[in-house]
Amino acid sequence: MTLYRVPALRHLAWMHQAGQLFQGPQSIYFNQPLPGAMVAKFRHWDEFPEEGPALLTETPHPRLGLYFERLYACLMRDILGWELLATNLPVRRNGITLGELDFLLRNPHTQAIEHHEIAIKFYLGYQPTQKDDPWWYGPNSSDRLDIKTRRLLEHQSQLTRRPETVAAIAERGFGQPQKCGIFMPGYLFYPTTDPMPAPLQTPQDHQRGHWLYLDQAHALDCEHWVALRKPHWLGPWLQPEPPVRAEAEATLEQVQLTATPRLFARLAWVPGSGCWQEVERFFVVPGHWPGKRAFPPEK
Image (tube, rainbow, N blue to C red):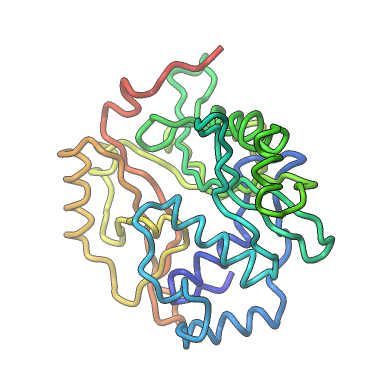
């Protein structure tokens, strides 16, 4: 994949080709490289971002989920040519919000209206003992892959079947969606110590990383590490200057002081590219992770 220097452009290209964390009939796959004409346009925008979509020059929203929504809107509308009808459309009953439709779009190939639910997720695999099933927790262990997937399938993607949703869409003069799709790219991070199988509903081509405890990280050479900060969790990372060991060490200290997992990338210099590029990514977690916030598996 071409690595563009404009971060939002690099994120858009990554989204278009990223593997999904859920595989099922509702999964949205683009499944093909960008057309040559679009690659040429991306390269032009990489040199002259002010001539591309506004997103390329905007300061990204600090909340990754909101930035991801902006990227998806840009990808579908400005890159792939879909008509964007509504975003975050609220569904209410007697003043109580039942949920929101992430996206209503018109498919340019079929002219059908589609409802898309999207999420960007990062999960770490944890298996207390070899006898236990592995569980996939978010970095702060207050989120879990199986629960998020179930909510997407059983609640969010089913909202258009409710009479309140039918009425809300009709009030805006749109036809009813003929299809619902789920788009959930992201990364799964595997423990460095023990092999662990991928979740059953996750395709094998998903994006991968690994995770390790802080004491394990201290035993390694962090010379080429950089801490990734949102929204640059959307990969891959590159930079023209070499990594600074002291900055990586300072971030490791923050893991200790704040008891908060941090995402790192290991970089390597790529001759001819003029930059250092990510070759692997990993979370460093405090020694008590996942800790008490890791709720027990639901029966």
